[in-house]
Length: 221
Image (cartoon, rainbow, N blue to C red; front, side):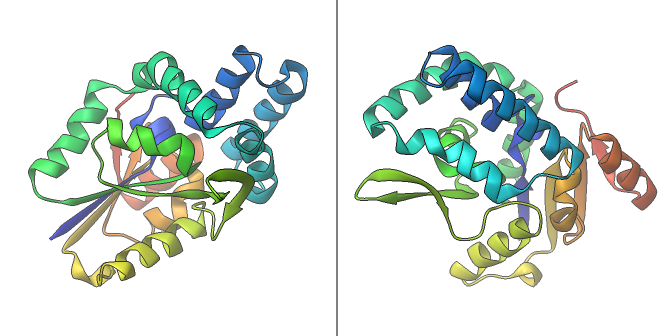
């Protein structure tokens, strides 16, 4: 049996869903433009540079979930999917997922972006399993905090291991394991599996992939 793991932002999407979600809420007047746009840009640059403090970012990113009703959040997310997410999904990305599914591979989306934002995107891509940073809830309302280990950098490795263990599986169960990612932040997981694939990679990941002889794939450019 084979396993196919997919990063989301700038991999299966030609943009960043975390970043665009905040921009969507700003555009609707739900978040203050001056306060949130600057911080959103700052965190995005830190992520690209590999210097992001994930806990500081999650305090920022999950705050709007706590301040609004689930009904409103779901309505805003439906608009977000239509206006921002679907245009970021290329046919190449859909075909890649379908290729692995057609070959009977176990498929999972592995993303640092929170589970509220990414759950509907995983369903849109027809990927049955989601390993994302968990947006904590209490009595059906988001708390504005995360729960457990964020699915980021080394956290992606441990979260995938926990997920496999929950199904009675482990790394060694699979003949081949693919992980598709664009980012230097995913080097811990890319280095853990048999078939790392750099997708439209940032400069650091491209250099590493070329040096290590990893596959490099173009989905979005």
